[in-house]
Amino acid sequence: MPSIFEYVSKKMVKNIGGKDLRPVKCLLDATKFRQLNVLRKNSQSRFWEQPDDNPVGFSLMDILEPSSSAPGHLATALIGGDISAGVEGSVSGNFIQAVSIPDPKLETLQNRKLLHPEPSFLTECRMRGDNLYVVTEAIELTKDTVLQEGSRVETLGKLAANFSLKARETKLSVPQGTVLAYRKKQLVIRKQGSGEKKKRLKVKQEGGETFHCISKRRIEEPLHQDFQLLQEEVSCNTALLAQLSKDVQAVIFHSILSLLGDREALCGLTNMLELDRLGQMEGPGGIILDELCQGTRPPWIDLKSLILYLLQALMVLSDTHLDMLALSMEKGILLHQRELVRSILQPNFKYPWCIPLTLQPQLLAPLQAEGLAITYGLLEECGLKMELNNYKPSWDLEAKMPMSALYGALSLLQQLTLPGGQ
Image (tube, rainbow, N blue to C red):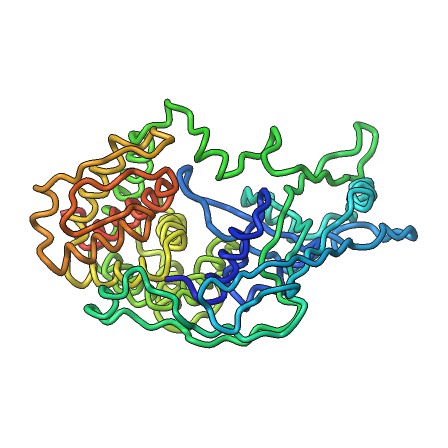
């Protein structure tokens, strides 16, 4: 289940509403989403992208030429309303404020020139094909508060008790100024003109003609993008994994299994691979990095991209997903789960509305009692309403991306349990 901080942030976004408002999910990252901070995204898949924007550690002001003219002040507005949702020590009343960039200031910034020569991190982002964004509004706490777990009911409480899933934190101190949510716009860098070497920046609203927001893609999925395209993408990656040696597959499998219990380490390894900065890392992440440096594999296999594809799929999933995936790997039921997920995705992939779906009993039978409970938990975490004695849940469009990522993760992890593709 989400952390207390993520739970409150998401509840606040839901309660106060507003287009394109995104919750901050980790308290440690909350100071990195202030106004004008630059964010990036890079995805190995056409069917899921990282749920979180990654701060690059720079502000928009760090990449622009100095200017003697002040661009103006940030606009602030207090926001009322209770966002506790069952968490004691909640944030309510006028405890939050929206800090935004007024349009005149944004226009002033758009007319500023980029530093010359261009900052190195921008060059690196372009070479990787990253999408860049700028935080244009942040929802911040105006007072210190303590979030403490109260009467919140865990959706999978019984499952957690039966299979010893890790308990999440029960108390969290959150300081004044913490960013709970933000809005962003895409950063596009363009040349000023044919006779001008300097470059200018352009900030586009999400959903503009050159940017396709994932939420819009879910709603307006072209009918020709059927399940077969996802199947081809996943199959291509599993086929490459099958060409690795038995020893290499075993190293990756057991390292990933160990990482599933530590999202921070999982995120750290993902960021290192995305940034192509293979530094030092302790634990199972370090073992994977060592394997990447060995070079004992066919030259046509890009092992870094394969591992990153798997890691990005895992990062789409929740902590509860990861806990249950670890149990599934230990119980050896990945193949049965993969076939069940495929049987759901394949006939429903193109439908942008909620429709009843039928689970195939012959695919459920091999899972047995414990395996079935874990599998139902995985599906419920994706957004499907599941009951152990009900074979007819409903397809929900919101489940499409996590279900696709789950299918990709199950497929690759299952391949790693079959060394050499046997």
